[in-house]
Image (cartoon, rainbow, N blue to C red; front, side):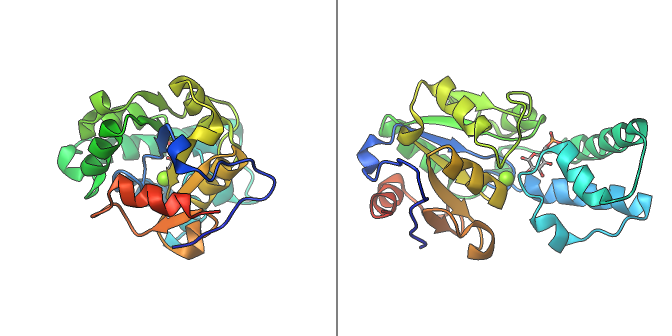
Length: 233
Ligand SMILES: O=P(O)(O)OC[C@H]1O[C@@H](O)[C@H](O)[C@@H](O)[C@@H]1O
Ligand SMILES: [Mg+2]
């Protein structure tokens, strides 16, 4: 477990004040981060642009246009070509999520959602994806979440705090009452900038700036996670 306090943030260190948990979607609740990667890889291969899994690590949580800009680097393309490439990648991505079912939820997610409901803690989705609502529907969790902030909600993408502040607002909560769960470095940065608790899912090398780092939700109960957060001073 990693325990750090973000600088210059007035995050409460009393977990009993936590009233909402904002979950990123891709790579947190299901494996769609992998689908995003594979479809960007397909596009890059078609265009003859070097790209690989390692380069993709920095692109987790990064919005569609910003991801493409990173991949093309200093290559110059007209806006029409940029638009066509974003559309093509999205077509591949939409095809790849067609067969998602509730079985694709990561282990432990439903148990954690149930724990949160029992504890009277609200649940939001905070995803940069414009496909987030479709994925949430396919996973069968639409009736379990209180609010969805997605790729249409704000202008400034992660690592800006805007999406999580938008989600907290939908829940009617203050930032200090919220926990963000993220698999992306950009998402942890956004959560800390919003003045929220951050739980990182994945390796320390990627999400080590979070207050608490977990490999996944398998066997994770809210009471235990809350206790870890309460020690994260
Ligand atoms: O292209 P979409 O579906 O709007 O998704 C935007 C971004 O959404 C994020 O959730 C993913 O982590 C990124 O990989 C993705 O680029
Ligand atoms: Mg993610």
